[in-house]
Length: 247
Picture 1 (spheres, rainbow, N blue to C red):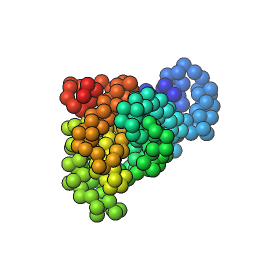
Picture 2: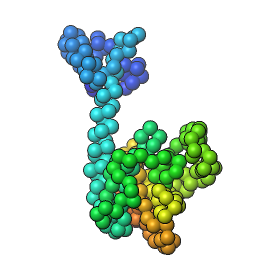
Picture 3: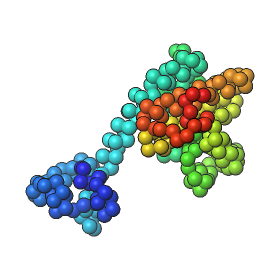
Picture 4: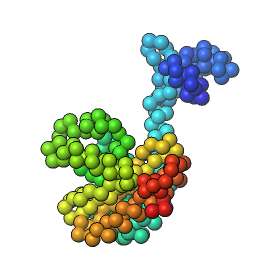
């Protein structure tokens, strides 16, 4: 596996049995048998033309599940603190197939979930969490979200882009009417050691809440997301409101 994740394997799109045997110092027949078994389990793939091996789909699936488990575990104490401070349900959200998925929900009060549960999916275009999760996408990628569906008729593209720019500048998104007119959604992106957005923290609060309260929710949500990011190895470059846990 170390050989298949090497720079050489990456450049060539995979490695043959002979080269893997050379790199690992093992017999060719031993390497061939091992790779055949790993291929059966989906841990490696083999190009039908070049016969080169490369890392397989199951390995990536295992890595993704490990990352998500670590994310959920690392985020838990920060989410609990935020839920207790705001007396609101706090959600950890991830992006899956261009939908927002609630990975976990932490409630300060039993039963107060705004009708949202772990595993629920939400449309990217209609949520504050969606805006936070795609904040690093380029304009063309975001525009592809508007290629059909009812969202294209209800939310203008330029308005969505303006909201995304707000996230880039402030570090959080505020959306009135999420998940219904009674509520306001506030979300802030989480980054990892690679400096990329991998999740977000979302809070849903009453729409009738005074503006000072919404501002406090936004600042505390940003702080929570920043703390989780740093626990995952993210190191903010410079200061400012986005990524500054002191706010």
